[in-house]
Length: 202
Image: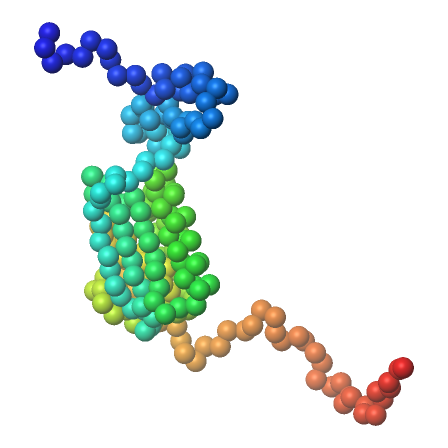
């Protein structure tokens, strides 16, 4: 019959068998196929297989500032509109801060593409407290953020979970937190150091 293919297309199992047969005979082998790609999406997520984003995908870029520190939040979405990728890029920060935020974005992206729920990340990172913190400019989702990650994951919660989280309470500027390394508990009644006791040894 016209239009019918008499030979069915080989599946991942056939490619895997061919890959095994050619190993050792071919100098440069293509990447080993994953037989799990033929499974339904839910089954792949259950077994921990990665669900990559399509080459062309949607998402948004949000430019905002937290306490005067600029942050770019970029997202990538699957065809169904669910979140599959995030990128956190600070502006005018040190290379260490930039590297840490970019690493957090990459780690969350890997988790999302392997089936980790966004709600778990939001629960973990929203309302975290560390500098920089302060008034949020450029995004009405929050008026105050206690950290850059606090803002980012509350914004993701609002956009992809439909849940707007409340602002954290601003820190009391008069509250002075004790340094975990201080005080040294040195008694205050120690005698002053005696002078002139230093000797040079040749």
